[in-house]
Image (tube, rainbow, N blue to C red; front, side):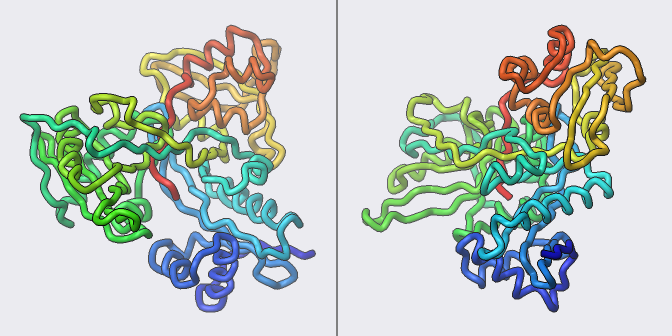
Length: 399
């Protein structure tokens, strides 16, 4: 089977791409076509052809992701689909490998995705690097506080201030996305139906917001759930205010349901009683170090860190990442370059996949060592653990 990797033509290849995605995700053609044409940038669409036939699709979504408090340029991968009769024949591996080589040529440091199947993406060098939870709490268990700020309806003129509200806190959460137009459109215009937005004003601008849709339950007259595409707060008063506002739905609403990213969310510390909050793991997100030295140099580190660590990394798909890399920290500023020749007794040795999970804070180097996934002396592992501490990860957005 002769495979080629292409940037497809919208004029000639749109119908074939829609057909592949419909069969991959059991979606209606109208919705898939709207997503490709109106929601995504067609320039990010890639296809694999098998003997001249359009066989697979993939969408590249440039954005950013916060690690160690710093935004790292990232390309999200979505819409990976393979024709049913060609599955299991290496087409999915091929299109992922070609996309990663394209990213590497373009200097992309990292890539993230939500896997339909973990094994496929592990073969491409991705590893589970964080969790994505659904949070649910009875609306009647939300706080009803006095002295909080009132909420008002969102208007289009508020969008920049809403983005500022998100950005003021996003860098504090490992793996939070540096949102662009694509993500904000998914929040404001949910696939499941139109949303109503509400904001809370404060001294620093908008300090909390929520975008909601009401999902009526067919079995109970008028009863419904509130599904939030996003809830964020950049101050304690903002968090208490937006929760008190949402409590006002309690006469008819059963549960508030919202995406939490990780097990923690910026508003959950302000709930009066956590035993009413339930979490459901919806998925893990996966991370890939594409340009390893650039990824290590761009993420954030403790502000006054001064250290050196040599990482001996193996990457079977992107050989440019294979080798010994010297990570140097001076007052929190990082450089990463090929390590000079010399004794390797102090090296930390690992696969690129394991390093991605350490990079995100999903797993400690010490835990990875205990699992046999990392080798090296304890003093070097403890240094790396201090530079990349295990922390709660929170990618709030599904893409």
